[in-house]
Length: 278
Image (tube, rainbow, N blue to C red; front, side):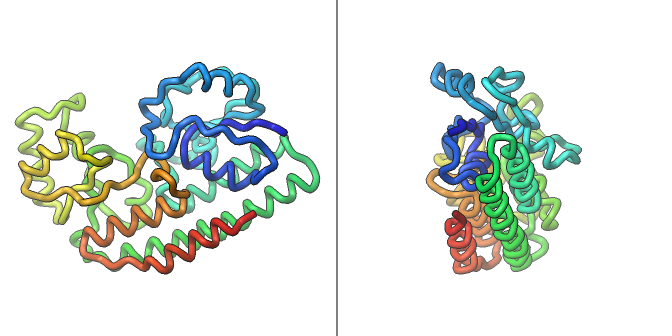
């Protein structure tokens, strides 16, 4: 049985869904962890050395894996699946059509490891996954359209949702990336951030984790705009959740926080369809 290493949570879910029990899939980064700060452990290096195939997101999502050596080919799936990426945002999967492209690219890179009926089974699952992701794209648009246009703004600390924003007409405002020189929050930066938040029309600021960082709490106090009660999971999957559950959870969090409505029954149905693929 071949061994495939999938570097981050989204690729991990995609790969596990595609191969089912036809391969051993090793996930380097647990759901909820930050891929940008991954430090390879001895066990990780052992798994990499034994891998028949290593799948990376690419676009520098996991700096520790740049130039990594492995037992088999190392493939940057996202860079092949989504070659047009002007701002080099590695968080490709927040647009479901990009996630589908990642599924198709992953399936093609798995092909040399399998033959005959096994390859046909992977292709069948790929088609089913494509179908669910297409439905997710439609569902997402319907939810976002319930948000008043003036509040279709996504205010976070760092850029992570540019693909979601571009597809669905959301204004992304990544505060630290836009206003803090070198990542440091000087008084002048804080004043500019507070002004931008107030002008944006947003009802909340979305933290990237709980508890929110000191910087995000400081920004909230300065601007007078509250932090959302739940974070948006921008770096991969939410703990214990699939790609679909993470995506629908993020969308529901966004639209409900910004004055819209969320079809949770529709979200549950998408997850049932995803989970039924075998």
